[in-house]
Image (cartoon, rainbow, N blue to C red; front, side, top):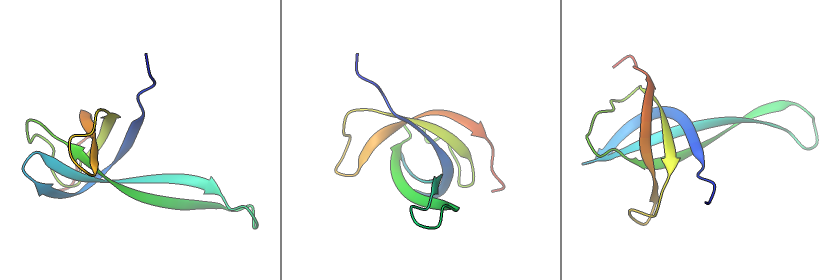
Length: 83
């Protein structure tokens, strides 16, 4: 069995039908200055039931490519957002 990556982030936009855009933040050590800095990346996540809303914190799991940029599925909604 292959390892399925899981990402956790905040929903920034509802892109289209059954698609959400998730902002994932990770902390890395800067190679020269040895300071912890934040790095951000946006992923497109497949939301089959259109249940997630903007501002929610979610966990997504890696799956087969659904479209050109979409290869994660919504696993769970961790916390409800402001909106």
